[in-house]
Amino acid sequence: MPHQLIITADIHGHLPTWRLIKAQLKPGDGLAVAGDLFDTVYGKSHPDYDPDTIRHEFKALAGPTWYVCGNCDHPDFFSGELTASFSWEGTTLLLAHGHRHLPDLTDYDIVVQGHTHVSRLDTLMGKVFLNPGSPARPRGGHQGFARLTGTRLELVDLASGKVVDHLDLPGRTA
Image (tube, rainbow, N blue to C red; front, side, top):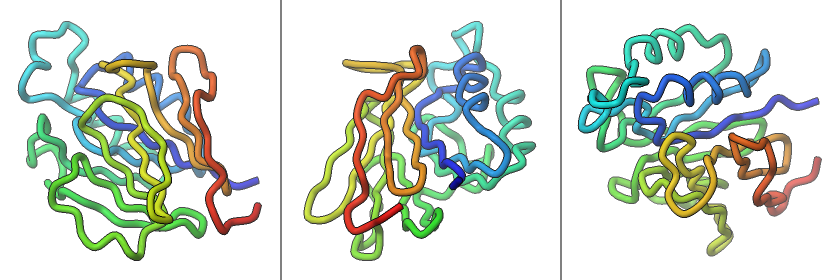
């Protein structure tokens, strides 16, 4: 059975939400964070804001991880990269927080973007565009994250565990 890649964004330093996302991971799974894992703007006013614990737990994860800075992150938390590209079980992904600073998208199967806190899953011009939404501060919908397993990409509601949208990747077979 293939491992899953959990994709999230916009946790904004909310420790209970981070731990719910972390609980989705099984041994061998990967985690991709499309920015704003922390919040240098508004986070300090929230009682559940705990960036030190989140950073420690993120760095201690056993599986592969990818992280890009969002507009509320600080480059000192991690490398400060604005985009990351990687392959997961034969699928090539581009990870970014917003729409700025994007490279040529030709070589990517899935383009992941955060920032809006609104989950979306679309296919445009042969590319899959994913915004996992925000599991901590959703706008106009559910507490979102995404899961890529084999050839299936799912948007999942963190609170209920229900799949709210899915897509079978074009040109792929299980």
